[in-house]
Length: 291
Image 1 (tube, rainbow, N blue to C red):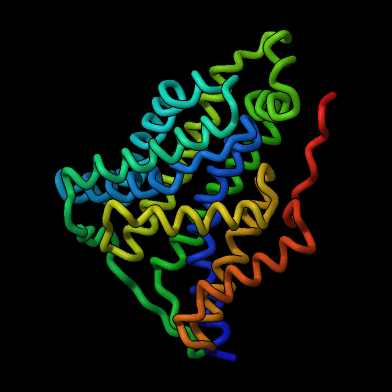
Image 2 (cartoon, helix red, strand yellow):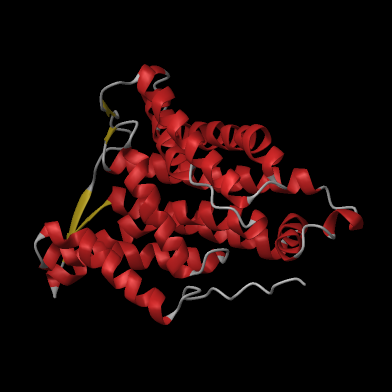
C-alpha cells in the first residue's frame, strides 16, 4: 500500500507536467483546428529560459518562472504571427509541415548556443517529509500545486471572461465572429500566449524536477503530451488535464511494477485501446460539419 501511495504521488507530479503541455495543444486546436507540433519545443525553450534566469541573472524560482512564461508567450505570439497566420486559408497539411519546421528550427537554434546538456542550478532548497512510509518533498507539492492553480486559472479565463467567451465563439465559427466586432487576430494571439505560457510553466517545473536539460528534450515529452490531449479530447480543456494525469499515472505505475523498458509500450498501448472505445477522447465530441 505504501509503495502504491508513493507511486501515485510521483504519477501526479509527472501528470501535472503532461497536463500543462497538453493544454497548449488543445487550446490552439480548439481555436484554429490546427495542431501546433512546435509546442513540445516551446516547452523546451521554457526550460532554457528558466536555466538562463537562474544561471546568468541569479533569479530565484518565482522570477525564473515569470521570465520563462513571458519570454515563451512572446515567442509563441511571434510564431503565430509570422509562421501560422499567413497559412490560415492554406491546406491544413501546409500548417502541419510549417509547425514541424518551426519545431526543428527551435531545436537547432538552441543547439547553436547549447550543444551539450545543461545543468539547472538548484532554485529551491529541498525539504523531505516521511508520512506513514510515503516520502513527500516540497518540490513535488510545488509542481502539483502550481500546475493545478494554472489549470484552474485557465478554466476560469475560458469559462468566465469576455476573452474566454470570444475564444469559445471563435472555436464554434471563426468566420462569423469578426462580423460581431470581435478582434479575431487579437484573440488568437492571446490564445497562443496563454497556451505557450503554460508550456513554459511545464518546462520550468520539469527543469527544477529533472535539472539536466537539452535542446531535444521537448520531442518525446511533446508527443506524449499531444497524445494525452487526444485521449482527453482534443479541443477540450478539462479533457487535456484528465489525459495528462492518465498518462502520468500509467507511465509511473508501469515503471514501478513492471520492467521499466515496458513503460512506453504499455502506456501507449493502453491509450490506443482507450481511443478505440472513445475515438473522440474521454470528454471530446465530434465537431459538426458545416455544409
